[in-house]
Length: 238
Image (cartoon, rainbow, N blue to C red; front, side, top):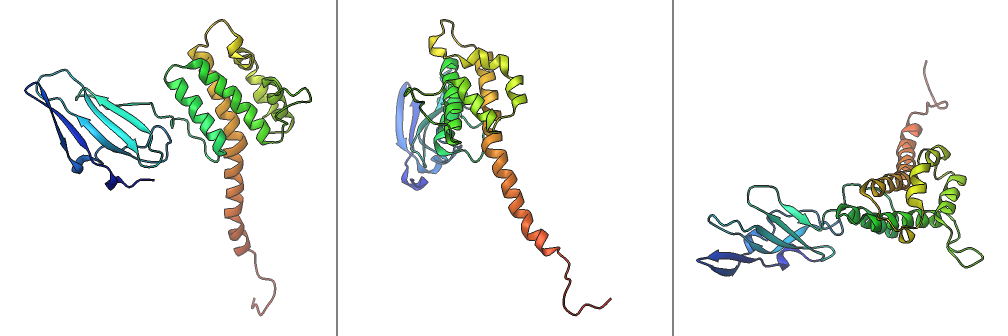
């Protein structure tokens, strides 16, 4: 991890048709945002470009994350909000995911946000497989092949990580994107990819987030229950 003071800001400023370069530390942290790459660190500006006058050129900020060192860029026309690339993958956060599944989930959300719907669906399929393996499904069968997508879903239902009602409610959607997208001629649509994300989000929330929250809640209540137990021994006056 890097400290914010370890960065210097390169300021690009047009002047009479020429670009003036200067270093300016005072605004290196201005407009800092959550890193769109890792979602953990904060960004620091390493370069800025601010057009002046009546020019239609855009404003740019080149940024780096103090946690993962991932690069990002923000741009604006000076009148509207800043647009950040890559888009943040944090609009569908799920708590308590194993690290490798959390990385897959972020990638599924990110690829969908940039219109890479087939990639997003394939990542959702991989997440379902990884979740089933996390809960005990063998990653390869006797024929040395990985279980099918539907086999992973059935395993999660049979072991109560996914409800049968949820599987039935999503049956049509699962059939639509459950087949290997790489073998399909037609491209995956936004609607299909969104359905895949919605299903996967529910699965992950039920399997990891809700279970963890319920267990944490029970542990928090335990001291209170012990505190409220009435005393039945000792010198008590009635």
